[in-house]
Length: 298
Ligand code: UTP
Image 1: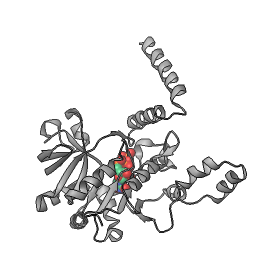
Image 2 (image 1 turned 90 degrees about the vertical axis):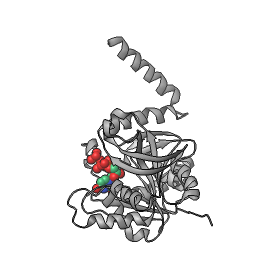
Image 3 (image 1 turned 180 degrees about the vertical axis):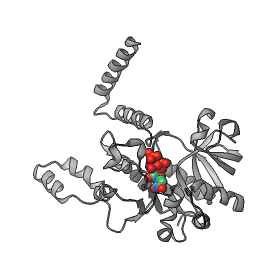
Image 4 (image 1 turned 120 degrees about the horizontal axis):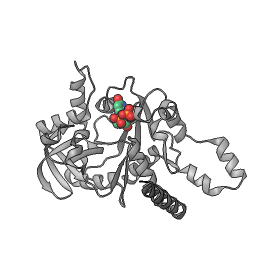
């Protein structure tokens, strides 16, 4: 058995997705697709590649489409079978989760990411676990969580995915205060949530992949008491840095797209469209034409 094995992952998907209204009035943001694959499927594929065996979804009202997505679709499958569409049947097979492999919990009120993770505490019990935010789609030769899991087998502790961002964008992220930089891996002495650029301890931003110890849940537990506002996951990790200094940042290899924002989602759509062999030529030709027309008009 591996030294520090991670077999459970939490997918917090209870947010309201207001930046994509009106689309998200009736569709969960996580079902929105890059080309033809929903954001949530990218997250699941990445988790599987990293060896995750238990998938815990923290959902909310209106996210029923997510549960249906992972279920079998008997009518559709029968129709495809009748028509001999075996390739499409294979595509569908990859979306179906085994019974017992996936669990859904409700976050009753959207009290923040930390609160969403805390909602899964009983299913996590006393094991390390991963957290994947499906909004952050990462294109990489080796999937990001797999890179982290491999590093984590050596380090243990807690690990957050880190990426360099321009200082001017510091106020959009949680930023790492680095103790020791060891290349891809770094030990962390602090974390600052959304600082002004002049107060940023570094330009290393935390993005939506984490490997965490059950202690983080205990820290969240304490934060639940007497807190009125949002419960931040970063605060619980920051507490862990103070107490046990076993938090690492991991500079992953790959391109991250912020699909929680409109611009990020559009960029990802273009990148994933161009990466597809069946669409590349037609799509590139179209983009070239549209870009040329835009420059000509300026
Ligand atoms: P976001 O900050 O992107 O919020 O959450 P959101 O509600 O999804 O989207 P906007 O800002 O209104 O457009 C980051 C991640 O944390 C989850 C979200 O579902 C998303 O995956 N989250 C956030 C929860 O599960 N619960 C919360 O209370 C807040």
